[in-house]
Amino acid sequence: MPQLTEKRILLGVTGGIAAYKAAELTRLLVKAGAQVRVVMTQAATQFVGAQTFQALSGKPVITDLWHDADNGMAHINLSREADLAIVAPASADFIAKLALGLADDMLSTLCLARTCPLLVAPAMNKQMWDNAATQRNIAQLTTDGMVLIGPAYGEQACGEIGAGRMLEPADLCAAIVAHFAPRLLAGKCVLITAGPTIEKIDPVRAITNLSSGKMGYAVALAALEAGASVTLISGATCLTPPAGATIVNVVSAADMLNAVNQHVATADIFISVAAVADYRPELAHEQKIKKSSDTFTLNLIPNVDILTQVAQRPQPPFCVGFAAETENLIANGTAKRQRKNIPLLVVNRAQDALGSDSNEVTLLDDHGAHALARADKLSIARQIIQHLANLYKELK
Ligand code: CTP
Image 1 (tube, rainbow, N blue to C red):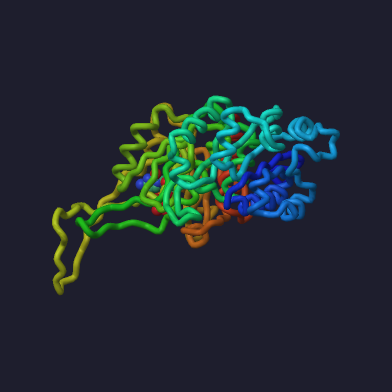
Image 2: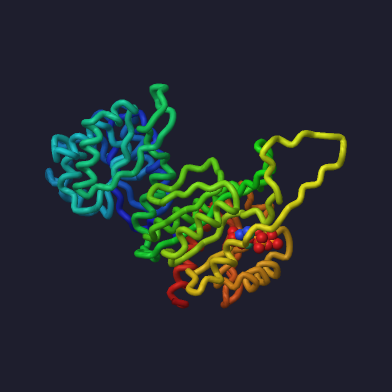
């Protein structure tokens, strides 16, 4: 079932170039099953036509406080009907209005009259974002209970680079889905490892693997959505960490082990998604190794198996392992789960998973094997979190 079925969402669009992205957000929300009512400021209509939003939402778009067909009560009725309101993009000017509680157009009046939660997705030039007045207004919105999503850092329409970009429509949609997600892990501390490790040979060479970290980061986001407090111990990746997680960056398997040991005592759940190197060079040379015409032999010694060690603690957290196998997935996964003595193991085909944005996995637990259909990694992560939350409740 689509994740936003029957949810009524009020989408406020204010004047900024990111208004065109609000059209895509409307499409994504409708696709997820939501009923979307769009309210535009006059400035927003300078960037995108109301017809665009009307076509995408299938509902009339409201732009005017004074000409509503609802007996002058649209600002009350619309806000009462909504389960959630979001302003995306929210210009610096509109954020200032929200901070002051002004109500001089339909959107600001709706925001003031609403009883539902309000998410605000800022979009502006970086100087405007950094300006003390904007920062003061933002702090006020948070104090008043509005939820800020973004902004992102990156290249801006004006050509400058910095903070102030609106989050991408898919990220805004994910934040809205998260808002409605059941808080299955509320109050739980979840420790997650993700990404590859790098084992140094000398100052310029290393052994690593092809893990992108995408699955681990998706699991961290899904755990946050489920209400957990999340610590993400990450090997080197190119990914933006999920907002709200505590991030610990590590390089080698030994670093990862240290970081896990520092955080594991307070964890209720440990999810080991990282592709930890099984071996490291016996000696990491201090100087660059010079080539010769001889065969070169590198001695490797085993790394500690972090997951096994955590599972062997006197009072272990609920442990979840991941296994990337190239053949005999279920048999190898089942043996691995028993060997590591953990309640849940997620197995996938290494060739399918590495670096990809989607994945197809099977969950192995005491009840047997549960196959999940191929989907994007965040959808898979959400299903894993749901499954582990049920199992956790059953076992604890
Ligand atoms: N793992 C770990 N520490 C290691 C190696 C693996 O914590 N030194 C964890 C991984 O994060 C994963 C699980 O163990 O959750 C399985 O990892 P995998 O590499 O598939 O299994 P291995 O035990 O290394 O066995 P093999 O490489 O022989 O398949």
